[in-house]
Amino acid sequence: MIKNQIKGRTVPIEYGHSKPAPKMRYVRLGNSGLKVSRLIMGTATYGIKSDVAWRVEEEEALKHLQRAWELGFITFDTSNFYCNGVSEEILGKFLKAVPREAVVVMTKVAALNIQLHPV
Image 1 (cartoon, helix red, strand yellow):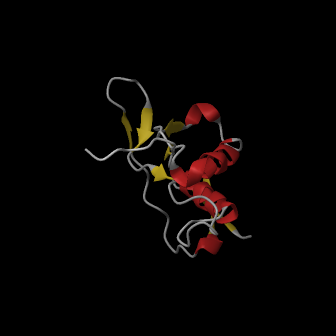
Image 2: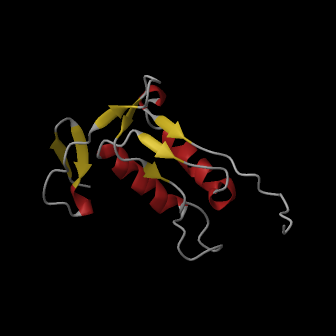
Image 3: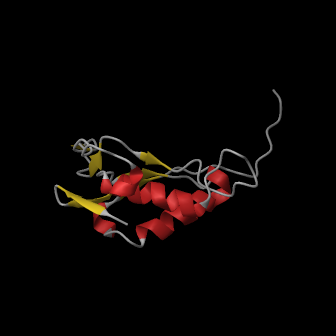
């Protein structure tokens, strides 16, 4: 793979980008002190494609996450509800390869086995 050095980040040329990506902006999250990227990488579609056609399989999802990291994304969103937790597992595999203290993971939980009764 041919690589191009852009402002301290190695960006694969194979993605077909002819211009350097714009610099990511960062903000503080409320008064928490956390620095987050202005854009957040969501993982709702990462899972097992055989379940639903629009899902993104692990190999491709890991490429997406790596590209997001290269573009300056440091904030990622996930949930146990996304693809029955598979997206969390995929994100976890990606996070093993990056400095944990440099990443913010946002999540939420869903009660998966509740029965709703009509009112």
